[in-house]
Amino acid sequence: MSLQTIEAPLPGILYHKPSPDAEPFKTPGDAVAVGDTLALIEVMKSFMPVEAELAGTFKGYSAADGESIEPGAPVCEIEQA
Amino acid sequence: MSGIRKLLIANRGEIAVRIIRAARDLGIRTVQVVSEADQDMLAARLADEVRVIGPAPAPKSYLDVERILQALRDSGADAVHPGYGFLSENADFARRVAEMGVIFCGPDADTIDRMGDKVNARTAALAAGVPVVPGSDGRIADLDSAVAVAEQIGYPVMVKAAAGGGGRGIRIAQTREELIATVPTAMAEARAGFGDDGLYIEAFIQKARHIEVQILGDGNRAVHLFERECSLQRRRQKVWEEAPAALLPETVRQELCASAVRLAEEVGYRGAGTLEYLYDMQREAFYFIEMNTRIQVEHPVTEMITGVDLLREMLLIAGGAPLSLRQDDIRCTGHAIEVRLNAENPERHFFPAPGVIETLTLPGGPGVRFDTGVYPGYKVPPYYDSLLGKLIVWDSSRDGALNRMAGALSELDIGPGPSTASLHRALVQDPDVRAGAVSTLWLEDWLKARAEAAALAKSA
Image (tube, rainbow over all chains, first blue to last red; front, side, top):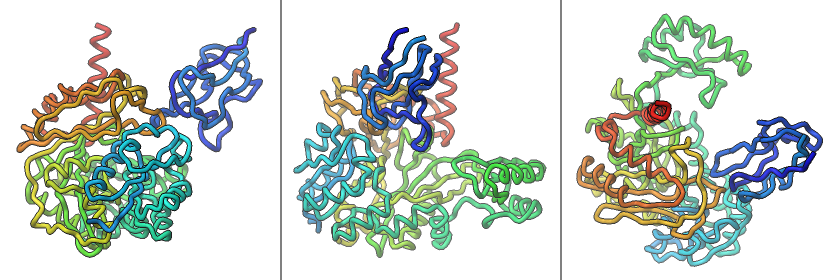
């Protein structure tokens, strides 16, 4: 068990939800499988998914929904299984 | 002299720079609004005043009507130019600006509303005797009337769900037999998909070219500035534009441009506008599809063939002057091509590539123009569209312009990130592009074939 920080691969605007009215991709306590979408980053009007590269338990987002984010900045944390 | 003293630019990037230059030439002071992420952009360096209006995301800055109106009040500007995109075709914004007693550089809110609605625009076009895509007059009653309409306009036809949209609920029928087989299924699908089984029929234009006509109007009178062709598109985004259109018969050109003037005068159009048409290469006919009530990205190709400064004309008309040009004053000379240079990687599915511009070496010589909002050392932000700049060339013939474009692209160096310059270097050498033998589907097919060839070469 170790706490892993997922970093933004690109600069842009971070979204926790697939659309403004939808539920967040993950809420704390949710199980995460490899390949799950954790968030979206909007870069130059394109939406790029941030996908999980490890499995575990979702602990929470590190930056707010709709906030601008730099490459390498923390997106969320996962307790690795 | 313009009736405007101080102009606020409610846009960013290359078009903001273009507007500032036009205003400066007329002795108009400029106020540039910027988001927090745009304080270093070229337009902010060139404007007389800069106002930060909000955070980076456009909904909190360039799309926020209240913040722009506040900047207008605070700056004391007597006019606003919306550029393209953002609030440029937002009738509510135009109305609020007018209510403040400030000049909106564009048509009035009612015209934006009217021409922005596809059904209303189609009605206005029909009233002005401008051809629209032939089809059923509203919904078809039954299978027999569907067949009757199709026989009248000729196959192939599109069967569309009245309640559909965005490409959904469309079927193609090549023959009478296919139509008879398609209609009942399409009705059932429309009922299931949209809760409404209404269908209508339109001619299916297989080999379409995208041709548009630039117009200027002062509310009473309108003139055209010939046509542009923008058939090279990817995901409905224009990539490469020319003026005039290649391979367009002269009689068709004259009818097309005259129809645009009729429609502009029918709606009492004021300002610069563009009427978009599809040109059906098989039927040799053109059809009005929609009007853009703003300046367009590709306006420079029109400026190059006519010598008319469209932004200057917009500012003069907005300032209250009658149209200075007569139709006979406007001549089409030579040929112009514009390519859009986007911060995208053509080798990786056009993946966006924001970041610092370290190298920017520009081409020069006669008939070469570069419109941009960036400079060496500038960090391209990830929050807005990917347009870095536009390379425009002119020469006395289309072949000359193609050669000049090839040369200019070989001089151009933007880096270190990828850009669509590499795509244009390939396109300018392509036999179909050089022959002008393209349609709106051509570029996507070409990209697909190219990706497949690259994959094959890799696996070999």
